[in-house]
Length: 142
Image (tube, rainbow, N blue to C red; front, side):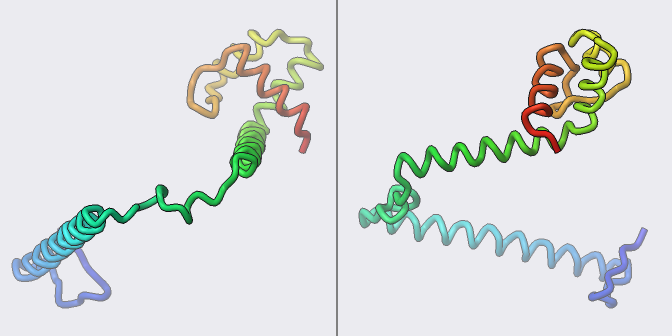
């Protein structure tokens, strides 16, 4: 089956066209590897001179302990907000089953598994996971 390229109309699926694509791919791979080799060589020269590279450089150490802690807290809040958002539909089902129907956490987990509703990680539901979804939903109402 021939491949048609808008920007390469001369590549028509013939033997010459296939050869041209293969040559372009080979040159591209060669260039990629050559860039990697040159970069490694340059970094080795700098390291031999004693130059500090990457995050060990003093100007990269600009965060204080308090800044790192604050960044971790912001990231944790963002992950929680994403979890609440991802599980909004599940939270509605779980809260309704728990508060209106009086179902146990195990019964809710069994229902979610029977309906084929996956968890965020794709695992089977268990009572603790259901509790966490309900707790997050109650702390972060939309």
